[in-house]
Length: 339
Image (cartoon, rainbow, N blue to C red):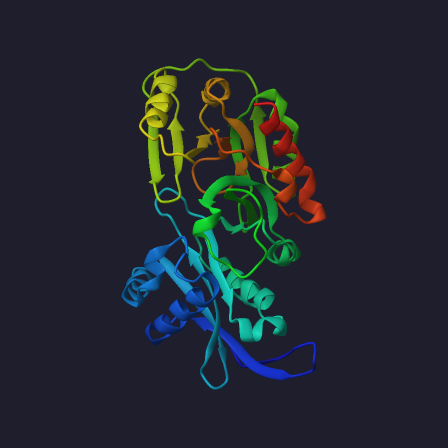
């Protein structure tokens, strides 16, 4: 990519380009992360230059950078894939140096990375997870055509997550989950309780993808297949239910009982491509979980997000959202308050 002119509000011009990470960029990326997040970034391994280089060589995480004509790195954004479980490409770790934040670089950087992802033949979609303590990125992401699909609640302890924006009053940060459909056309059957059928249709229609929503319940049978991802430092546990079985209630209860930290919260990623997901949803509701949205077009499974706050409440008035996102935020709030 050639160098392009960018101008700030005072009329000062710079020339920058976007390109893929090179090994020599690792130190600059660490510095960008440290400038924004101090020593409290939620992916501590990103402070290690050798880790960044290795992740890039293995194509697990691919950083892209904004580079000034003189060679200075003033921004970064990565794409990450969680193969083989998910084929989507997730964007994250987007940082622009504080000295260059008024040059309107971040939107073009996101767009550049999206264009690189679209060239990956087996990537059905692009996902982006956004903070709710400001709306700057929300506006950019919406303008680039990503669709709000849900929320990933209470993932990070607020006092462990330094940043340069005004803090909200929630104990833990909730994130927005958005998706851009590259080439998915039909996700087939998804099994949903009737109360969430309309919101699901609205989201999948926005993604321009077909789905056959079935609301007839199928009884649980066999053993559950579950993946547990723990984050003790953030006092959060993510439970992926790939297949729900007769032992689901006992397994979920055992997972929760083994995690009794003071601010412990739980998120479930429920496979709604599994015909038994409606029965599973009902059990999860009885255990204190509520609907929080969807993670669509990620691969072989369509996912419903559910949340159990335990003893950690969410102050929804503190969650910042652009006007377009407010209806789904209110829907989530209603589900949360009626759990």
